[in-house]
Length: 153
Image (cartoon, rainbow, N blue to C red; front, top):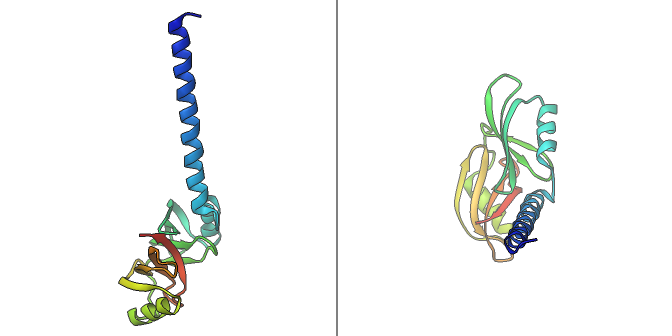
């Protein structure tokens, strides 16, 4: 083998190793996001079982699954899905809790510096410091105030 051929083979091997490392890292991130709950195919199957059709854009974001779909009555809806339980929260849902209720629930759960409390897309959202002192954004069930999604802010 010539010197040039040996250098090219060595360079190709290095590129293959870097590609393999990148693929393993990307797979690890995707699995870590979903390690505590449902996978994208499970979310899609669960939505179909509940009568949703034309399901698109199933993505994991802010500690929850999100999807666009058609409800049983044919209307387009945006959905948030609890990654652990699969509970579906349509964007048109009416909140049963007030902002004060949400702040009280978070305080009782040990959250501090709670701010930017907002009801949007059928979910309560808030930012603050969790009981461990980490700056997070949370999503809460609009009926119970239970935290159903959490992500570092």
